[in-house]
Image 1 (cartoon, one colour):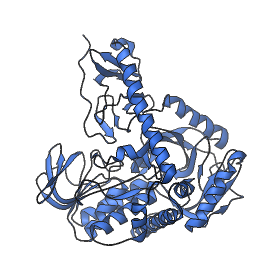
Image 2: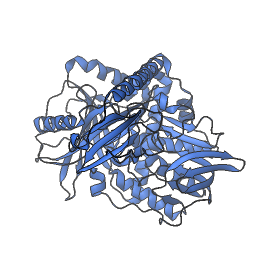
Image 3: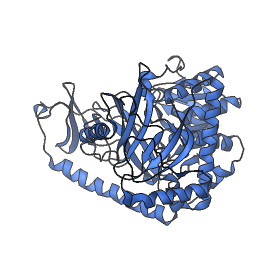
Image 4: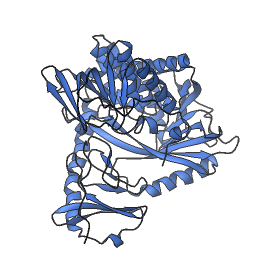
Length: 503
């Protein structure tokens, strides 16, 4: 499970592992080395700030390194979702933010001599009964000033029930983008430290103490560019709906590869584009299988369904890579970029990109830096102040009711599942059982049995096994852990504790 971008992208420059930045002072510390974090850091370094980026794993290890890499203003049904949740002014501001983000990144790619691969973007439906969703999206595009139109030629080798298109959008190799941004940040005196997980940000009289496993880093300001904010101030975890989906990459016969970038807005959810393989060959990427993290059920079957669909519709050959990505949607359908409540105006965050992080991440960086340096962007002000509307409130109530239901039912199931022998766990399987008064997560991967706490370290959710990715995923707020308990992503900041081995 290695993303194609890691297989084909360049190495990303970072600061030497020693010395760690503990007890050193920076103007701004950025937690998270994805696109949001590096864009923000580069912009601040250009303004003369001393900046350190602290990454819990490695640069691009989470969402940016696992995206489909589409830099597009046509985004499935997002514009009509925003319009229905927050109104016309909000959808206009959202489109302007994404337009600014797209233009900024294209200028940077051109300046650096990196490829700018123009492709038409297409949104389609499988079922004629869902053409009204296309009509709503097209109407929202008109309100937002996005010049989409009905598409007679979809560039797909199979029939659809309707489609709209937007010319001259861009597809990227995201690791190339991250590598270029990281190189500039280092050249400007910034620092990038991998394997430095931020656990807390404390307010002091002279600024902030950004706490890591190795000690505190001092800063005037901190930006949490961690997908979902890792601090619970503002209760963002309760205002976000997490989603996880798969991307598969296949060999494809000449003439069968889709022309353009495609996304469906009815079932089955599918995202399509082409990319280059390790030998320079054309591959087709198929995304789908979206599910609430920790509630994906048999994810191995989901992957098999993607394989079957790709063979039937595209005539693909061998699957050469697959991976998964996680994203978050706010109940207003709008992204957020601004001060974190309770941070005293010194802690900032960005989240809620609704699976369109290539444009939204850059827009968030532009917005955050403008706020931090005393500037003003009208579209950013509108997005920050837009309310969720009635539809957003209904979504929030429903989502949090589902979370509450999982708390009760999952704990009950865990406490009624008795202890088991290691021999009862097959290769690739995981189960949460009761041992004494504690839920224990037991899994077997590559012949090794791991026994760790079955309780998420964020807010105590009972973990579920993800058989495709072989990870423990929390169904409450989407924290994820490796079989040995190592934290992978989400709002949690601590690993799972080991459980005692069975006698």
